[in-house]
Image (tube, rainbow, N blue to C red; front, side, top):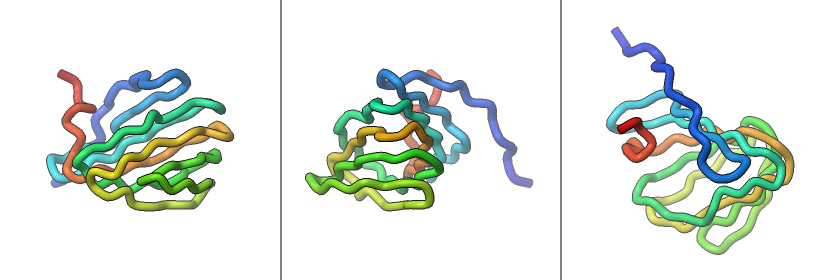
Length: 108
């Protein structure tokens, strides 16, 4: 039998940005990020490999110094250690998968 969805809290991260863990396992975590127009995901890096799917909205991403605008249906992978961030140009939602899990996203 597989584990059922847990009800993780919606957490405010940066101004105009919320995060909610959707599924969690030590090897993989699925997370929803919702952005208001003009909100930013600050430039950062982490050891996890990240896959991002744009569920809705429009975002200008910076990954390793390269800039790209993405919209609904776009997806991409951010390598471990790559400095990245985004600016939301139209309100939307990103679905991110992290491997291994982002333990820092779990409640204490």
